[in-house]
Amino acid sequence: MQRAIKIVSAVVSVVCVLVFCFVGYGAAYLPESFVTADAQSTDTGNPLFSCECEEAVPADGSDFARSYPAEIKLWGTIPVKNSTVTVVHRRYVTLGGNVFGLRIFADGVIVAGVGTLASGNATVAPAKKAGIKQGDVIKEINGKTVTSNHEVSRAAEESHGEKLSVKLIRDGKTKTVEVVPAKDNADGKYKLGMWVRDSSAGVGTVTFVDNVTGTVAGLGHAICDADTGGIIPLGSGDMLNVIIRGCVKGTSGTPGELCGVFGNDVLGELYINGSDGVYGVASEKDSSAKKIPVALSSEVKTGKAQIVSTVDGGETEYFDIEITKIHRGDGEEKNMVIKVTDDDLLEKTGGIVQGMSGSPIVQNGMLVGAVTHVFVNDPQQGYAIFAETMIETAEELEKRLADNAA
Image 1 (cartoon, rainbow, N blue to C red):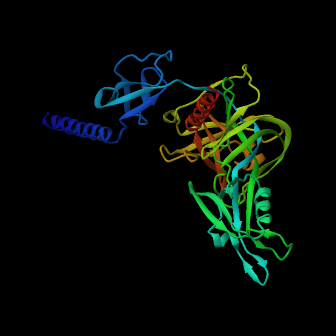
Image 2 (image 1 turned 90 degrees about the vertical axis):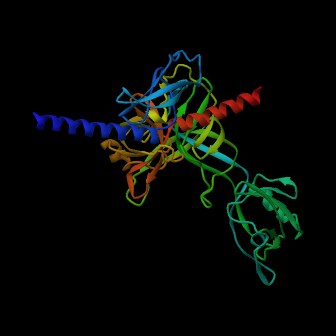
Image 3 (image 1 turned 90 degrees about the horizontal axis):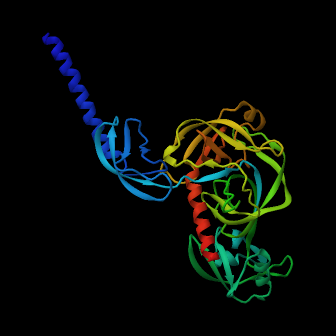
């Protein structure tokens, strides 16, 4: 009898210690607030803990983004800490998955490189001497706005060797330098000794469309300059239809790519080229298109999911993947690690290829994210961004356009 009492006491002691440890962990590490689109509870990200609102939350959307007191409990019974739940509207969008062409024109011209030229009996480097660097964005020359390579060349040619004042942007800061063009022995024209780029084009995949506002989001990452690696500042841009002609299969060390040609149909205008994707407004809306709910980042789980892509002809298809890792709060573009498990997709592309960036990821009937990057040494795997992040940027664009219209 005494032995049985000792065993029971020991078990109770262990349970108490475990409960104490769990409660301490929850109090220290669980967040003070949560965002949810549900009416009464939210996911804490830990199956041991639940977060329940202490008062009824309207489910009709009448109290958009209203916060409510809540309590986190261990196993749904033992109080751990007080918290706050913010209830937001569930956003519904139309899935993309179709490939589109992107043409963007820089807000200014990007310095792709600086070099030397033979002038007279010397080798000179006017731009480098003036302090101009690769990656700088030139906005003005002698007070005149420049938006094309031609305008920069013409300013140098018409200077006749006189000093030019160049206004540029570097690391988000405005800087003005003075550069003296030199006459190139090769053709007798005055030049600045630098290469500049004013536009770029590429292929990506649409992530979602809001057929109420017309907002289009895609790519999941920025369009960057091929030489500098920096985000191209968007002056203007548009989206065009693309006809897929085939695919170069990806292998370890060599990313594959979708092969396509631009069509003549302009699908819409681009307004944002940001770190979490490209955003614009479609030329036409389809009010009858099927909608899908957008998941909050807290609702995304590791496990089975699907991506929607166009890799063969013009039809979008669903392909099986697995979300293997989730990185919450680690910045944009790389919120998730995904792995392609679909035999058909592996046969066609080898995994993730260039052009598939932006492919929507669906899990449990919701849009949870978009493909952003492929692992160069393992094309079966890649990174993805949360759909919630892209929705936030889309909403910022919608507000900006609404304010401009007003």
